[in-house]
Length: 153
Image (cartoon, rainbow, N blue to C red):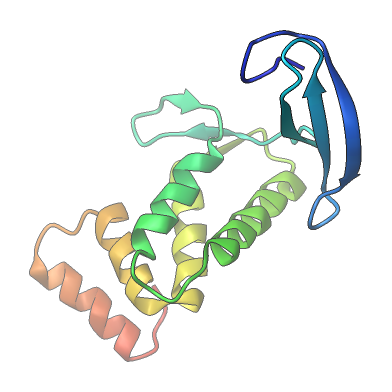
């Protein structure tokens, strides 16, 4: 493991323990060169499907894009980072269980909107307004009316 302070490649593990939800291992390490300590996390490499964008391009799944989009939507709302992380964990688990090699970006966007709708309706509307790219106020109002009437997306 490369030291983040001096870039030396030899370190020793001082302590290992399970991560918060037992899906990772937390290791305390010490650099054999500069003697500084740092923490690393080890988790199973998950195979997630390729994402098919609207224009047909394919790109690798990027957890950070989903987390940051949800964080922006939930900004100044009573939704914790832990809840966002768990929601994305659940999304990833469903993607893995599907066994699909590729998935449309729109499917992921719809799953995120569905999750946000149950977490916080304001965050849902924020995300939907960016994701669906409402053309005018009428489309936006239609979505709001749908929420107020308790209807489906």
